[in-house]
Amino acid sequence: MAQPANFKSPSRMGALGEDAPLSSTGSVSGGKSREEGLKGVDFERRSFLGKVVGGVGAAVAVSTLYPIVKYIIPPVKESTDVNELVVGKASEVPENSGKIFQFNKDKVLVINDNGALTACSAVCTHLGCLVRWEDKDNEIFCPCHGAKYTQTGEIISGPQPLPLAPFNVRIEGEDLIIAKA
Ligand code: FES
Image (cartoon, rainbow, N blue to C red; front, side):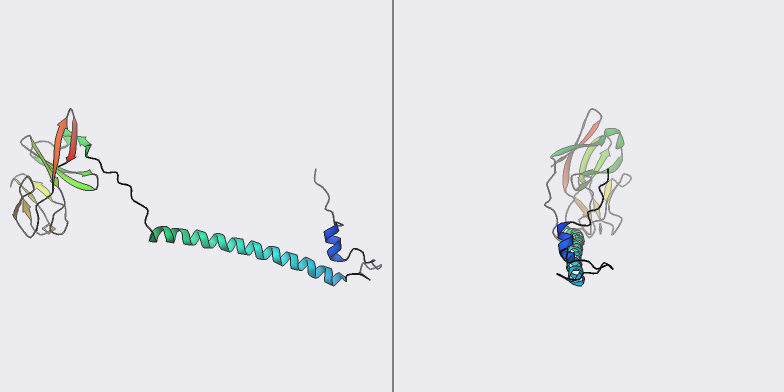
C-alpha cells in the first residue's frame, strides 16, 4: 500500500525552517527564513542534477570512445591455422578441371588432370589476382596480365616474379583434403 508523502520530515522541515512559526498566510516569521530554506533545497537539487548529468556524460563518453579504442588497437589474433583440412568432396573437382578452395588464410587451386591431383596457391605472385586452370592449354593462367604457370605452379611466362606456393592434396573416401606442403 502506498505510504503518504511525509512533508514534515526533519531534514525537509529543517531546510525550510521548521522551528519558525508560520503566520496565518503560511509565511515563516522567525528562525531560518523561508527563502533561505528554499535555497538549500534548490542547492541540493542542483547538486543531484549535476551528478546525474555527469554520470550520463561519462556513460556517453565511454560508449563513444570504446569502439574507437577497439578500432585503433586491434585485438590479439589467435592463430587458428591447421596443417590439413577437409575442404570439400572429391566430386567437386572432376577430371580435367580446377577449383579454388579456402584453406586457412590461403586460397588454393586444386587441379584434377586426368585423375592426377595437384594443388598450389590460387593467388598470382604478380599483383595478386586469382588464377584459373586452363585445361585446353594444360596450364594455370592469370587473367589480369597474362601470367602462365605449370600445373604445379612453376613459371612458364609472364610478369610474375615467383612461382605459386605449393600445397598437398589427397582424397580420403569422398573427402578432398588440403594440407600444408
Ligand atoms: S596479377 Fe597475375 S599477371 Fe598480373
